[in-house]
Each structure stands twice: as structure tokens, then as C-alpha cells.
Image (cartoon, rainbow, N blue to C red; front, side, top):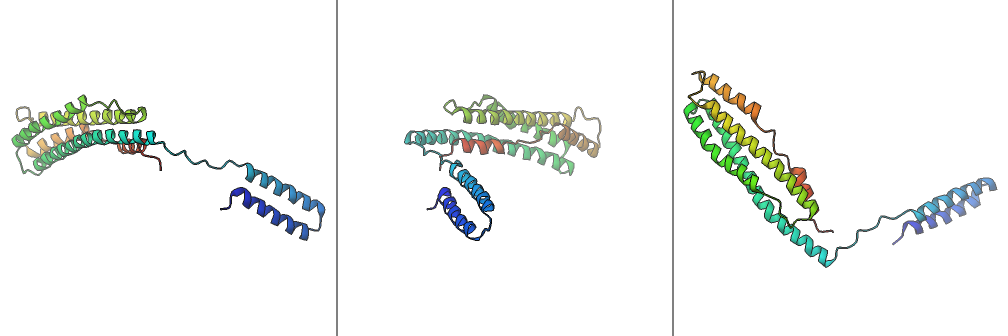
Amino acid sequence: MFTTQSLALALGVLLLFLLHRFLPSRKVFFLFLLVIAAAGAFAWFYPREASPPAATPEERAHLARQQAIVSEWFAQYQGLVEQLDHNWQQYHRILSDFDEDVISVETAYTRLRQLEFPAAQVAGTLEQMDPPVELDDASYDIVTDMIFKTRAYANAQLRTIRLTAGAADPATLLSNQQEEQSRRLRDVMITESPAGLFTAENIKALRESVALPE
């Protein structure tokens, strides 16, 4: 297999031959000779990209353990995220049913109060969740950031559900008109809903942090 240096040397020899044969002026020939010499020196000393060292059996075993720890933690975390998504779908379903006058405000209030319980459970579980202490520092920091983001999202979700339930309380409604009542609930939803849970970059970085070298 030809290297960069051998190809540069072969090209230089060929150019020398052609220049010496066809250039009429010795000055022009020596000028080209200097250019070729400089190019050859650059190609010869240009640092080649070093291949990453192969992982030792101990390093591979360590990364395998790290992958197992991350996999176990992520399965629990993903379950909580799915619960958050389910609760949020239920929340919007209640508001949609009331907006379309499928259910009464009393029913909407009851369902929102019932939804508070699973929403509070998820938020409480996240408050108790800590990163696995066996993780390497880089992975530990990534997991910590994911937990903080998800806690904030879960707490904001719970707050929105509670405030909407309070706004739907028949005892505190200021209007008997369904349209006005629905507008009040949607105002709470718009102003209080969390923007979203953005952890895609964290998940990507976490996978890379425990990936085995190729």
C-alpha cells in the first residue's frame, strides 16, 4: 500500500525528469526544483492521523459494566417518561372533551383531581431518583442533568394539572356558560404548561460515553 511520502517522492522524480527535459531555462528549472523540494518536505513531515489505541480487555470489561448500569437506569427512567407522557395525554383529553361539551364541568373537575395522583407519584419518584454512584464522572454528570430536567418538567406538569383543576372547581366558577368555563381552563393550560422535555442531546451523549471503541 502506497503511503503519502512514497507517492510524493515518485511524483517528484517524475516532475524532475519532465522539467529537466522540457524547460529551456536553468533558472526556471531550479525554481521549480525548490517548489518540488518544499512540497516533498511538507508531505514527508506532515503528521499522519494516528489511529486510536485499541482498548485493553480491562477497559472493555469496564465499559461493558458501565453499559449495564446505564441500561438498567435508563429502563427505569424511560418508564417514568412514559408515565409523564400518558398523564399529559389524559390532561389534554379532559380539556378537549370539556371544550367539545362531551363532559360537564363537574366531570372535568373530578377527572383532573384524579389525575393529580399519578402526576404527583411520578414527580415524587423523580425527586427520590439519583444517578447510579458506580457511573464514571462523565456519564454521572449527563444522568444528573437528565434527572434535573425531568424533575422540573414533572413538577411543572403537576402544577398545571392542579391549577386547571382549581379553575374547574364548580364552587369557584364565575360563569355558568360552558364556553366561558372552557376558555378559563384553556387559559390556565396555555400560561402554565411546561415547554417540553428536551433530553435528546443528553441521551446521545450518554450512549457515546459508554460506547465501546471500534
